[in-house]
Image 1 (cartoon, rainbow over the protein chains, first blue to last red):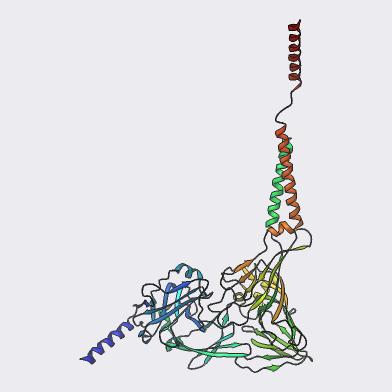
Image 2: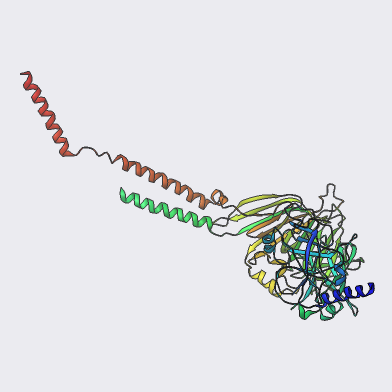
Length: 241
Length: 335
């Protein structure tokens, strides 16, 4: 009887994750389940993390927040940090969601008190860092989308707090590796993060559902320890565009 | 009297309008940055002004390797337009120059004897001044200092931004403001619109899309301002060697943007007030305006006084007749 029950639950989970057109919504669970823990101020404690945000560009979006995750990633809560480039806006919250469908998309119920300010910031000025919550440092990142953005060439964007170093992103694929020079932002205040690494995505990347990356930083005559990360990808390009 | 007053009023309004026009008239402003800093970044605008002597220098051309190669005595570096340069130094240590050109060559090293070695899209130079200071001249688009943030250890140490504005008549200039910079500030110069040199660089640079580097993200009409300047680093062997790097740069700009920790940053502009104080043309017009106003006031007073009119000839005769009658009546009473 018990194995039959388990089978039914498994089938239910698979059916939920395979149903097209049903996008699960991640709901806020902590630290305060009633309102986002966020801050918009000139004096903000800045995170020392190298990776400040991971997003996918080229996906047309009419606003709101969403992220891409595999079914396993939703077993635990999802940690979502949002940070502006100038460091004035910062938020860190936990969300819980049903497993993502085939496309891997999860909508996030992100009701900010500073929605207008965030909208005014525009692309490249706000970074979303999503990962399954764990005790240690995250290694798996779930690329997020935040705010309006036009369609275009599909690319993975990693926002980096480079410490003003020369930063390179190595994309490790089965067939070959690709090294991309990250672009440093030159204008305005860059307290939150200061560079973006842009890796164009192929259909083969989407088929693998994830991408292994390494960030190398060179500070004049010394190299800083490289940072490894795995980024989940949406499964199907046609579902995005 | 009335005609004179009307003419004066028209003149007064004319002078006032001219004054307003001159106060708002756009003028060439030269911004001067005089800084002590640990880090300076700029994009090369012209190769001719950016040729550096590489005596006693080593170069690294692979960002993934720490290996360095010594450069021949007397070799000269010629930077390509569009190359991004970052110069850094802590205390009186080595001076590091990082060169970058996306998709192109940062420049070439010309050695004595005609040997030329072309560099790739990335290079790191290490200057180790021993007895003589290092002076690196440049023409380019500058950003001095860095934002104070996690793991950032090279900052602007201090300095000033001063503005020189041209007089309306003649070739003279006057100081139209000066602003002191604090440690940890970051300063960039901006101007509206691109001149021929800027447009050519943006069009023809082999170093990727410079629009993303030089044009403002917030206002696409703003372009980073081109300056001429030099960087100087003194060797540790000097008796009182100046720490880090000294930099002086001059260039036409509309304003300087200063990013400061704990604030939203601010702009340094030339206040209009300084034109009234230091431009003889404007100062003269203000004096003329004052004189005309006083003259108008005088005329007005005179007109007021002339309002209590003196007795006319006819009324004077009547008064004399009345007095005579009074006197004759008195005489009759006595007799």
